[in-house]
Length: 49
Image (cartoon, rainbow, N blue to C red; front, side, top):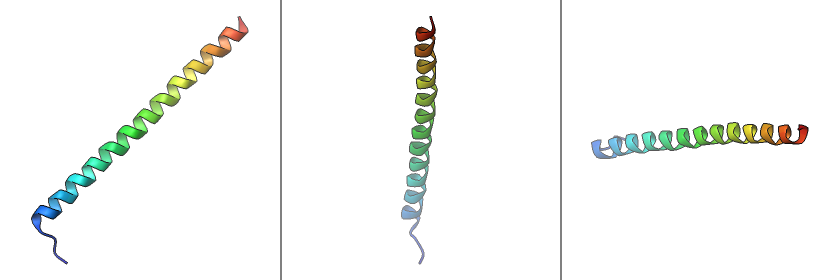
């Protein structure tokens, strides 16, 4: 089953697109976790004061 050159390059672009989307999604997930952790530390410090 030989793919046409156009379809092969299109699938390659789609793979790269999904890789970028997944990478950005995980990066944002990681950053939001760090941000909430800082916020939690700030709240616990307020309670200690």
